[in-house]
Length: 281
Image (cartoon, rainbow, N blue to C red):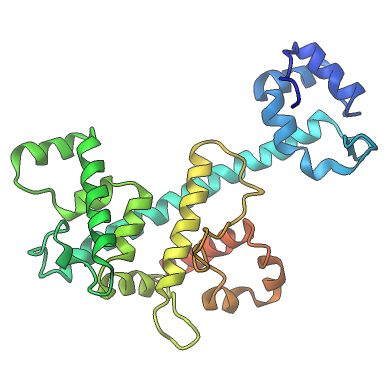
């Protein structure tokens, strides 16, 4: 088992980059980049595109003239991309939550069937799934410190749907939506024109897209690297996160081969589709 990494001063880190990795890192501006970004965040986080092979000992070989400034430029691109994605992913999240809350009450006798009643959800959903979703929503409401949640808990008998939808975690919200009645999920599909090749509302595409959106949004919010993020199918769930569907095929037929890699390009195109539909509305 390899030994733990030893502490290195900034000067020692610069020497390691120059001698061991053959990465240009010499002057005060280079040291400033290490101070501001950190060795792990900058080098380990953004070295991949600069690697051109490995030596006999398995150590990375870098493209000639690779510099710490080059890695930092890639990091800046990733930072800008993160801000852009966070802006649009949270906008989409807000829209979907808002419409879901409205349609949920509308198709439940205008809110007379409360969200904590299993009858408010799709008859085709398993009862256990519905009860688990309701239980998760209750727990998250109880943990909330928002003033409006406390106000309703102290002054009303029930928490309205719109508050529940607004407060719960994104993953729990996706569970609420996926277990909702078809009128709810179809309304969201209609908003974003998510239909299959036969013209039916594509709920699998909707739920998979939201899971993918949640993953990217969380990575952005936690300041993780996003330019290399990839979609991963959940274990025992071949349909999870499946967004390469009819809607995408219409818009991006020339680059379907690229999209088969299930990389960040999928989210770019999905955002474009969302924004086009928003502008039409």
